[in-house]
Amino acid sequence: MNVAYPAFDRCRTRGTYNRLVAFQREDIERVRAATDLVELVGEVTTVKKSGRNVMAVCPFHQEKTPSMSVDAARGLFHCFGCGESGDLFRFVEQTQNLNFSEALELLARRAGIQLRIDPQAQKRRGEREALIEAVGAAIEFYHQRLRKADDAGAARSYLRGRNYDTDIVDQFQIGYSPDGFTALYDHLRTDRKIPDQVLEKAGLVARNQRGRRYDRFRGRVMFPIFDLRGDPVGFGARLLEGEGPKYLNSPETPIYHKARLLYGLNWAKSEMVRQGVAVVVEGYTDVIAVHQAGLPAVATCGTAFGGGHLDLLRRFTERVVLAFDADEAGTGAALRGFEHSVPGDLDLRVAPLPAGRDPGDLAETGEIELLRSAVSVESSVPLLQFRLEQELGQHRLNEPEARGRAIRAAAEVVARHPDAVTRHEYAVFLSRKTGVDLPVIEQAVGRAARAATRQADPSPLPDYQRPESGRNRAEEEYLRLMLANDPGLAEVKVPAEAFSDSTHRRAFELLAPVIAELAPGAAPDLGSLIGDDGGEVATLLRHIAMVDRPLAGAADLAKRIELRRIEDRIRYLQALLAAAGPEQDRSQETSELLSLLERKQQLLAND
Image 1 (cartoon, one colour):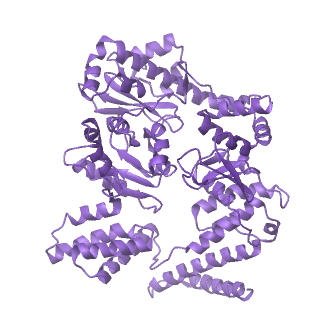
Image 2 (cartoon, rainbow, N blue to C red; image 1 turned 90 degrees about the vertical axis):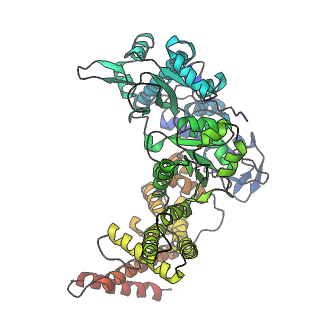
Image 3 (cartoon, rainbow, N blue to C red; image 1 turned 45 degrees about the vertical axis):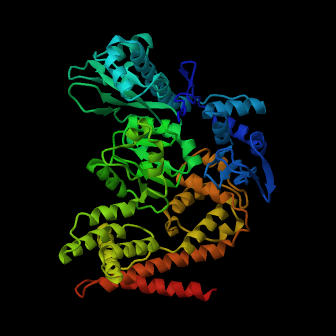
């Protein structure tokens, strides 16, 4: 299967990059107020009324039953099927393949509103635009050099050896950086009139000890890297011959942050939503080969797979499969990925690949079904299970002492998982694998969890329990009250630290100063507040804003949240005092505990 993934469709028109213009906030809000989101949605998909909201067949993934909720009053949409959400500008961006400025201009023309430029915001945006245009110009230079220059013969041979035809080279805008020290610099400075400081800031040129500028990349096959929006931000460069690192990436710049970039995500994100999976591979050529096989693949850009990358992927799918080389290095990469797998909201898995083969090999040799099978739910292995099997494999389980060491090491792995049920299931798994009784393994997991807690907090904290889900529900309901600016909020006081969930706390901190300026009952303009922000807080607020059920009483919710916070602190102090030795002075903690117990009784007495 040969799938086209146009690298430049979103950001490039007739050889130049679309200008991102910063318009005045007042005009943006006028356009927002003048636009009917329900009407916009109805132009591209089927909609029907459902209570306060409108439900629509989501245009971002295949479905028959409407799962996208559209709130006309707030100008927000949220799909409960694929998770896509945003405001009216985001909807136009995604459905019309436009950037924000283009979407705003389209809606302004539709509403008959004249837009004015904000000079200060335009200056800030102008820097980013200049860097993007510089990287885009470098992409064009390298690409044309690969296609036409005599000195790019070795690069063309390398790509032919990977079965890259002209279409693939054009799709992914692959290029070649010549050996000369200033070929790109001379072209961009002289022919494109790009200032030296822009070229340096974009990571395209560097200076030697004498202050002379030179091309950062020389004698390499160039793989352009695009951010989530499709803007060109940097390069991954493969050395063909000579000394130096095999792969060299762009340095950190205002537009290139490798910890928050995944090569191929701009092309693969729609397929991730449609297929419900993201395949993480090791290199650029693996990404291209797996893309051609019709699977949504991404790779890190010269750094280890980390939490920032997981944050990107969880926007589009819940299942992430690590498909690294089936060798010691690839296994090590998967194990490093485990260190960032503590959040339980993702199904992190490892694909079993044939020995000595990587995903690119399988795709390039036409073994597509073998590759698809390896990344499937049926064949891939949960990452935690993979990590445990690797750990157990390092010990001689037929020897009692070695089996004990294996259990202690595996218990430390299991203890990191936040979900108690999952920890229990993996304790059962270890019991079956080792023949050690389940209660013994669960005790080992408990000890490991307490040891990890003590390392994070120097105060002893045995058996401290995380807040239960009922507290999280109360916090979400309180945020719903804030979105409605319920008049009852004026009678209660809930501090930010009362929220146990960090996302809830940040949402509270975002909303609190806004509603403080509003009259009771005047709901905040959520669309204006979060716009098309794709972060955790914005996604949470859009989601709960769409919930169509009666609001709870503010006083009752505030009491529930305070009571849960007090109980949480009481458990902490009780555990602390139980672990304290006779020589330790815990009078302050004891006094606090007694005060909290008294306050708890007062709250319960008022029920």
